[in-house]
Image 1 (tube, rainbow, N blue to C red):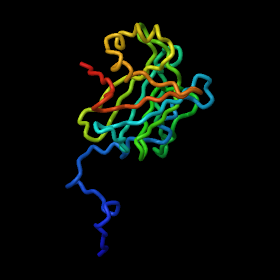
Image 2 (image 1 turned 90 degrees about the vertical axis):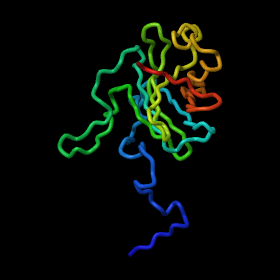
Image 3 (image 1 turned 90 degrees about the horizontal axis):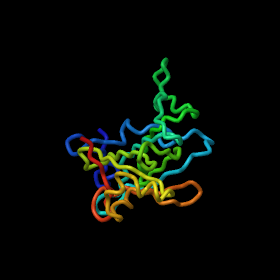
Image 4 (image 1 turned 30 degrees about the horizontal axis):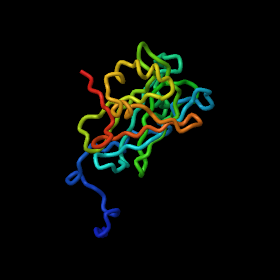
Length: 201
């Protein structure tokens, strides 16, 4: 019989009797989940940030999903990102050419996530944005929000959603330009600076 050293938490595996799921790190993340933009695309941007809990601590086991239109504002109508080999059933990944507009990223041990996607185009009266869905421990229902890119102040001011929010709340939906096509968007689940989340009925 193998003895397990229970004095160190890292050597003890959780069992169903003393854990609370769901476990988003199991089976949901996939290789290249954050590589939404085709390699070398001129409109590609990098979007990155952290997911924080109500105490301001980063969450190492959250999932962030992104959806967005292409630079012309059109929603992609191509096959999904998680292609499989029809013969073996193995994961093929993205083909590196088509833009599906969707990605799923797991936060790392420091609660950080990053994605490479295309700058979204405007749709209707809305300023350009990416839809975001957040899955994390302690959430029985996933959360929806948006990330707007800074730049066109007139479009942001006229956006139907942003125009309803107080300035400090509005800022939780607008990414910070870090230069060189990189934007930072932190997601705070509760507490001071809580991200604005949306409810769909």
